[in-house]
Length: 197
Image 1 (cartoon, rainbow, N blue to C red):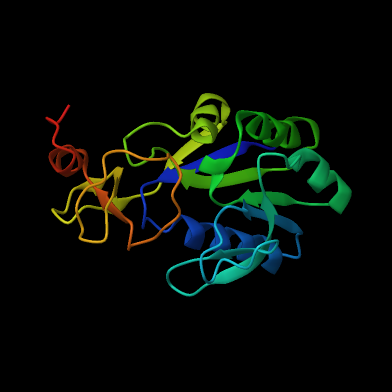
Image 2: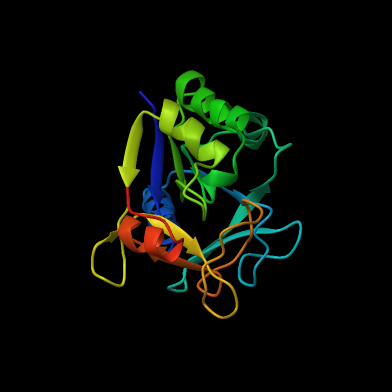
C-alpha cells in the first residue's frame, strides 16, 4: 500500500539532499519518478521563472515541475502517465487542498509520495501545507539539524542584513543562509526576546 510521507526539519537539515538521494535510488532501479518544487523559490540554482529545479547546498540538483497554489498535482501526475514515486520539495508551500491531492495519489493511484519541507516559519507558526501534512501523512519523519550550541535545531530564525532577528513580516520570504539561521527552541526564543517555553 502506497503512503504519504512528510519529511520535515528546520533550515539546513539536508531535506533537498535527502529527496535527491531518494530520487536517485528509485531511478537506479529503473523506476519512474516525478519531482515537484515550489515555483516561488527562484533563487540562483533553483531555476528561472517557469523552470523548476531542486538544488541542495552540497551541489546536487535535478529538474522538477514547479507548482503554485493553482497547480493540480493529482492531474499533473495523471497527465504524465506511469509514475512509481512522487517527490515534493518545499512542501510547506503546498495548499491544504494540494496535500489532499497527494494523499489521493497514494490512496487511489497507489503512488508513494515523499514530501519534504519546513514545519514552521520564522515566527514558530505552522505553514498551512505543513499543518495539513502533519495532520494526514501516513508517516512523519524528522530530519535533524544542529544549533550552534550543539542541541537539535527545530526553529528557523529570520535575520536582517546585520544578522539581527526579524520579528514581523510576511510568512514567506525566500532566502538561504543570508536570511535564516536554524536554532534550538531556547536560542530561538532568546533571539526573539521571549522566554523559552
